[in-house]
Amino acid sequence: MTTASAEKRYTPIIILLLVAALVAVIALWATDKAGRQSASSHKGKVLATSDEVFEWKLVTTWPKNFPGLGSAAENLARMVDEMSNGRLKIRVYGGGEIVPALGVFDAVSQGVADAGHGAAYYWKGKVPSSVFFTAVPFGLNAQETFGWLHYGGGLELWEEAYAPYNLVPMGGGSTGVQMGGWFNKEINSMEDLQGLKMRIPGLAGEVFTLAGGTSVTLPGSELYTSLQTGVIDALEWVGPYNDRILGFHQVAKYYYYPGWHEPGSVLEFIVNKDSLASLPEDLQAIVRYAARASSQDMLDEYTGRNNESLRELIEEHGVELRRFPDDVLRALWEGTREALDKLVANDPMAARVYASYSDFYKGVRNYHHISEQAYINVRDVVLEEEDF
Ligand code: CA
Image (cartoon, rainbow, N blue to C red; front, side):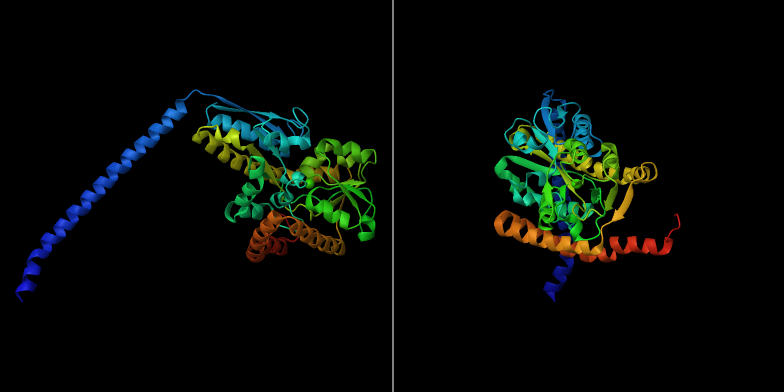
């Protein structure tokens, strides 16, 4: 009884003391936080007013100022210049200016250039797993590949695969689903692919060879002449926006879809690890954010421009659009499985990357059945031939 009434008497005092202690703790925390914030903004100020200017060379696998694919490097240079207030200047060189188009990987790895822009699958002879970071036939589309890279562990694996070469990879744009390519004869069955010599890089090139053709990897600058002179019989490059500019409609009659072989090719920025480490932290962050922004910008540009170029190719240049027959696509899928099996059996890193890619693919395919894919199908159901 006595104890209980004593408790009652002291309870308000205890609560008051507790509240006072809490207020004191909050006040101390707020002071500390303010202190830390002012310290970090002070640090930021010091860096921002530092007048040290860094100059980088960036080499690309594309011709200088090449629309679409070439815009990512130019955009990166401009964004970095703007965000850093001119403290990091990146000079962009087209393929062949300092190093050959397909010499970009080695040049950046060896420090001949600080950074590069191209496509990871060009280097599959050195890094077999690199094909997963550009395009896998019948694989992830652009949206899904970026999901895997940034939220599915893909980028960490890419960094690991390039670490022995002193390179840091970053996504460098995407073309979206590409076109199946330019042919001078119709492809009605697998028979029509026999003996055909086609420019088709990456894992798809191996699939094409398994299907009875011959695949070659050539840079974009050599494609038109190669097809015109019969060095190759067919080629794939990107899609209407880029293909129209390169004039393939002048040397080939049929334009095939869909791009089974490159369902959402992701390009790459590669940065020499020492060049990146030599920058102050804020400039390193600017490089990473600018790469991400220019990467997204490329996909936006293709999305914005492809259809107008397709219309022009068909209506003004008489290009004949064709879809690959389903049984040809099924046979190419069988070839893809075989090429993937061979790839993962011969390279432990490729096996690890494939495991991650495949796991992500299953999940995203499951969800996209009822979201992206279902929506696009439904849109066709309700609109049919109507305009929106
Ligand atoms: Ca391509």
